[in-house]
Image 1 (spheres, one colour):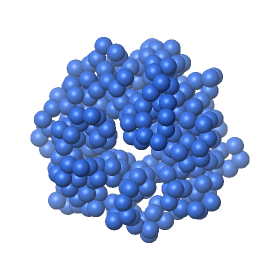
Image 2 (image 1 turned 90 degrees about the vertical axis):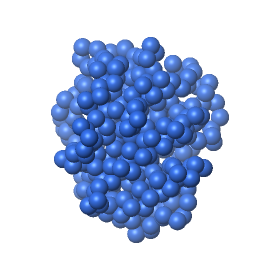
Image 3 (image 1 turned 135 degrees about the vertical axis):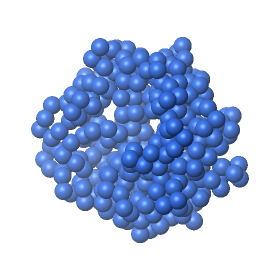
Length: 342
C-alpha cells in the first residue's frame, strides 16, 4: 500500500519541513531544496499529487538566488548559503527533469525554467554524487530539447576518470571509501548506457554495481554501511547508524541495473533491499511506522531513532512507488511481489 499520510503531515504552506520530533513536524528545522526535490518526485506519481507538486516546485523556484546559486536551506524566513551542496542541486535537477513534462502548464514551466537555468552548473561539480545526479537527470529527460552531448560526455568522463584513479584488485569503486547514497553512481552510469554504446560505461557500471552489492547484501539481507566513520578501503564496515536514504539508493540502483540488463537478479536484490524497511535488517525492527505512515530516521545500535523526518519518509515512499510500478508501467507483477514483502 502507498502510504502518504506522513508526507502530507510534514508539508505546510511553504513546502516540506526537514525534521520531526518523533512523528510531529519540527517547524524550527526549516526546509531544504534536497527534501522538496525528493517530495516533488513523489508528488508527481501520486494520483492526487498536483497541489503538492506545485507547492514543492514553487519552493524550489524561490530557492534560486539572484547570484545564480541554488540555496539548500530556508529557515527563519531566509535562505542560508552555508548549507548549499552540489548533491542537493543534482537531486533538484533530477526532480525538474521529471516535472517539466507534467501536463500542468505551471508545474511544467517552473521545472523547465529551473532545469534550463541550473543544468550547466554540473560542469562545476566536484562531488561524484552530485555529478551522478546531474547525469541521471539528463538521462531521465524523455525529450531532446535539453540534451547536451558535451555535458553528457563530460559527466560520464569524470565518473570514469574517478574509477580509473581509485579502483584496483578487490576494490571496484570511484573513491577510497564508501559513504552515503553510494548507489546513485552506478545507477547513473547504467542509465547512461541507454544513451550511449560506450562499452567502458557499461563495464564500469556493471563492475561497480556488483562490487557495491557484494558489500551491502550480507548475511542474506541488506546491511547498510553505518555512518559512524563510513567504510574506508581495507578498513572495517561500521554497522550503525544505518540510514533509510541509503536503502533507497541501492534499491533504485538495482532497479536501474535491471532496466539496463534485463537481469532478474538485480530486480530481486531491489525487492530484498526493500525488506530492510519492513524489519529484515540487523536489528529485525521495522523502520516503517504503520501508525503514522512515517519512517524512522535510522537503525541504531539501540534500536531505531524514533524521529520521522522528511528524508526518511521520502526514501521509503519513493522506494515503494518504484517497486509498485508507479514510476514506470513496463513491468508486471510488482504489486503482488511488494505485497508479499510488507
